[in-house]
Image 1 (cartoon, one colour):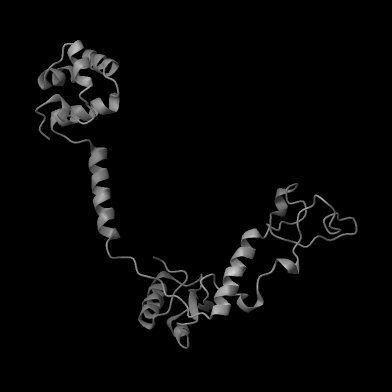
Image 2 (cartoon, one colour):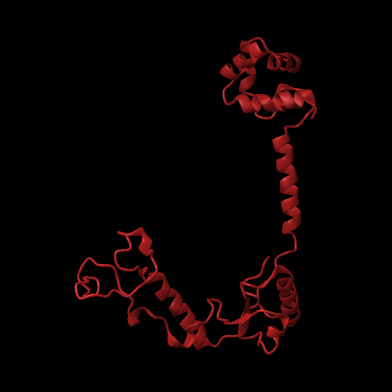
Amino acid sequence: MSVKTLTDLPGLKEDNVPELEQIGISSVSELRDAIFDDARVKEVIKNLSGVGPKTVEGWKAIFSGNMPEAKAAKKEVEIVEEKTEVGEYTVKAKPELSDETADALAKRAVISGRRPAFKRQEWFRYSKLGEKWRKPKGIHSKMKRRLKRRPPMVDIGFRGPVSVRGLHPSGFEEVLVYNVEGLDGIDPKAQAVRIGGTVGTKKRIAIEGRAAELGIRVLNRMV
């Protein structure tokens, strides 16, 4: 980067030029000499408004002919991100749903949003109990007797519509597969597959590749 005037430096504004003249700096060469002088660089930072140590370090790198490593790395990262963002996104497959099913899925989403978190009795008192739901038992259980100011209990009224019970939020019916042969007989319009958790990477790649050929959506893809 060639610096012909003071304002060519990043972070140095026209308002800073009079401030530099007050401390005896009126040219680029004088500013360069002051920056590399440990005594004067403190005076420059003190008198210039909006200029800090990081800005001065950037000026040093420019005058010495080297860009800061952090900025150079940042530029490289930005370039890589721009390259990877182009043309890699593919639209996910959608199921063919009837109007009734789509309406039931929307209702289920609303119900799920207002459903409370069900936690077992006295989960807050003993950490060993955890937060997983357990039905309260015992003749003295106030939660079981549904007294006031007690946590909510699981009840049938909190469930969603029966017609979409067990479906994925996208509307697909989930099918668990462990190998490529498990993709046989899958209906891409109504079913989507989920690869088992014990399947290795090599077999996962094969399953995902075959599913892409058949137009089947994989709910837990690696990428």
